[in-house]
Image (cartoon, rainbow, N blue to C red):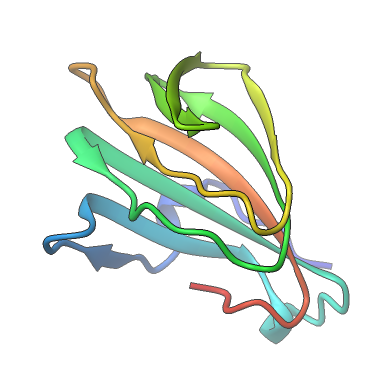
Length: 117
């Protein structure tokens, strides 16, 4: 069993560039913890930041933990905020952006075999 007192105590990787801006990613539960089927990641997107627009074979299950922003859904931006739950099927183009004044924080589950970060 693994218990983390707060996700912010986990080591983070910072992502900034042309395709991604102001994103910190943390592996909350992954293969190093003995998780055989899923990986739980926590992402923080700073105000004005965004994740890369992309697609891949695996699905995502997302829970917006804090803040507000938008997710690209079928080519259109959809508002999301604390408590929103999002399912992204495999091979669907997607992206998150933070168009608010506070951090957007979300938990993201992916299946084994997908890159953890």
